[in-house]
Image 1 (cartoon, rainbow, N blue to C red):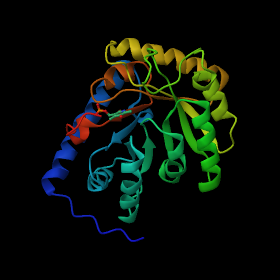
Image 2: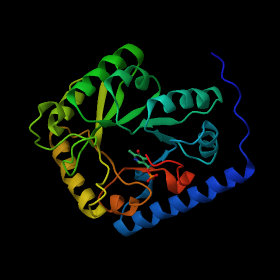
Image 3: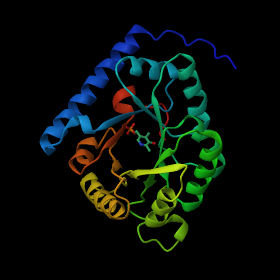
Image 4: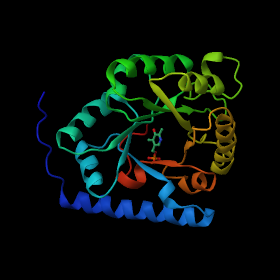
Length: 249
Ligand SMILES: *Cc1c(COP(=O)(O)O)cnc(C)c1O
């Protein structure tokens, strides 16, 4: 399949993205300095949902290496367009994921942040075995407040399919997957500090059983400073880089 060529980005858009990127990098640098951390150990994941492939290409031209998406229907064609433009970035899947999308996601994603059930881990492993030539990195998404309906596995939850330690063990036990760490979204009604302090505890527990699981994906446009204070290795930044999205999701 040949992709139509991408329209050249408007110069104004590129300048806007450059300014936003500089501001976000400055926030990361300041937060790392305050926490006594090296910004080089933090991966900025630009969450480009609702924005076009051209923005991904522009961001890549500005030095962004990692891009996040939360819906397969949008991410799969966007990743294809970016690849067809000859641009290589690492794709992070950060949204709730249905098992029937595993076969699509494993083909373009380098890292899935949102693995929150044993059954999803198994589906990803099976798909990765079929469609990939190297393991897929996976993070266990943690539901910090136990609110039902939200993505994420529970610590010590009663449902063994959606229990953090069980999901981590399933990922770690699959040759087609690589357990990279944990991820969470701070609950809306919690102070970010409380959320990320709790996630840091969960991360430590997971590392106790799986020392290789060093990644902590936490922090978005509104709370990246708190996340970095509590050890985030990956921050997922959408609106501060790309602008406010037309629809909330
Ligand atoms: C959209 C999204 C982000 C980015 O959120 P912003 O507040 O726009 O920075 C981060 N993580 C996940 C899981 C998302 O869906």
